Amino acid sequence: MIQFVNHLDIDTEKWDDCIDNASNKLVYAYSWYLDTIAPEWDALVLDDYQAVFPIISNKKFGIDYLYPPFWAQQLGVFSKEHVSKNLVTDFIKAIPKQYKFIDAWVNSYNEIDEEFNHVMRDNYELNLNQSYEQIYEGYSSQTKRNLKNAQKVKLELLDYEEPEILINLFRNNRGKEVSSFSELDYERLKHVMHVSRYRKFGRVYTVLDKRNSICAGAFVLITPDRIIFLFSATDSYGKETSAMTYLIDQIIMTYAGRETLFDFEGSNIEGLARFYSGFGAKKNQYPQLIINRLPFYLKWLKKA
Image (cartoon, rainbow, N blue to C red):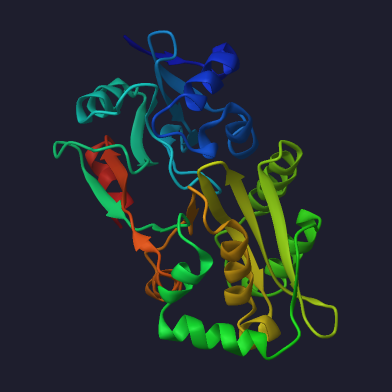
């Protein structure tokens, strides 16, 4: 039986045991990670935590709704057993009726029945189970040119910096053009980075230029079977010198030959998709569930 469980009543030890043993586990779904991105998250739980579904909600104009939080690309159903379409359907039907609008990005193992409105989003993943030389052969000609461009200048990779350095690099560059991140989003990102590093799941990589200034950086989540490219930043010099290509190539070189995926965490944006696929990454889609239970007059307003 699937039950709705309020945040304070969630048994986090059983929850994390479910994620540990899930056939489709992702670091985003651990209780400690959810605590950093959505501190009052609730849950749907099957029996004695045999399968779980995080509920990330908010309220606007008195209306409860589910939304996809920043810094967790894929959530949805996680199960110790095979995640069947029927199981996913059961969880979707168990979402309480109080939530009048549902926007949930579920994981790629969650097959959604056609009775539910959904769209497919793009992710790119690179299997690192080959030698670096074999992986490099799969790079596009553009990626190889970018890498040669980076090798012409004196760049140096560091794998220990404080998260604030990376966030400030983003805010002073790309962040000036992006209006979607609030102060709370940045604070939660910083929290994710610090907690993940403390738990030995996260690393900050930065690239120093010839002036010993940081021109690019990235934060990655590292688990035994997946490296997630969670957040990155670069300045104008980093763009000119292809510093991000250099950074990603160095990480790939470090982990090549292991049974792990490099998860680029996107993207539906054509330019980013082309950049990620340039490393030989393959598209792996995941569903975005969209259910509109709003009254008819609010449905119209939502579309507008």
